[in-house]
Amino acid sequence: MSFTGKYQLESHENFEAFMKAIGIPDELIQKGKDLKSISEIEETGDDFKVTVTTGSNVINNSFTIGKETELQTLTGEKVKGVVVRDGNKLRVSLKGIESVTELTDANTIVNTMSVGGIVYKRISKRM
Image (tube, rainbow, N blue to C red; front, side, top):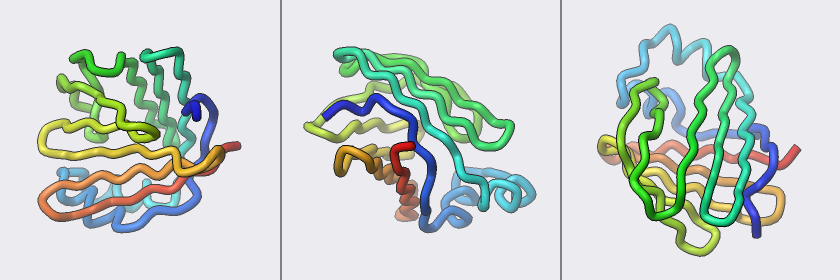
């Protein structure tokens, strides 16, 4: 299955606790908790381009599976990481945050991020 497509956040779990754990200010957490982010993914072989738009905040990341690249985190910081593919899962570790993005079926992406035992789960559906 290809990740290519446009997905809208349908639901999420543990948003506030996770955002606090990674240092997002309370006022931004309150603004962001009800926003439905849009994720656009382009997959060409091992090359990916991912754009996540949440309100006025846009995060753009491009990477090649298995190669070190600079990726922008949820806090806006740019850090180096290596995205690996495991079947229909993409895994990356950035500054102590473990992220797994799984294509669970043709129309659903589940992204799970964890830091210090706090797990944040996002479920997005193809638009």
